[in-house]
Length: 135
Image (cartoon, rainbow, N blue to C red; front, top):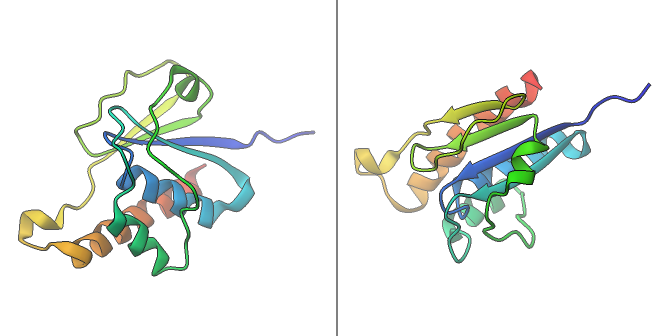
């Protein structure tokens, strides 16, 4: 009997920060048990340096990740599509579970820089752990 390996795609608009962080956190947490991808609806040019640094503080390396476009194939082969934030819009597909995470935005409270990124990271990390438990 083979067990189905869960597949999750994390999506944000630029695929440079939040979706990449969520994917790296899920890979770190779930190892080989979950297939993890991240993509953007309007991919940017590079990863957010503070996102990368905030994960390095936890000993998590994003490797050679780079922003990439969300494809119909990514959506079709996923069990769960998680959209981070309200900016990215993904058309829902039957048979795929869709979730939208409106993550903490410390800049709205005047918190900037690495302090902001750590709060964003920790919010995403708790949501990733919850999702992992639900897969």
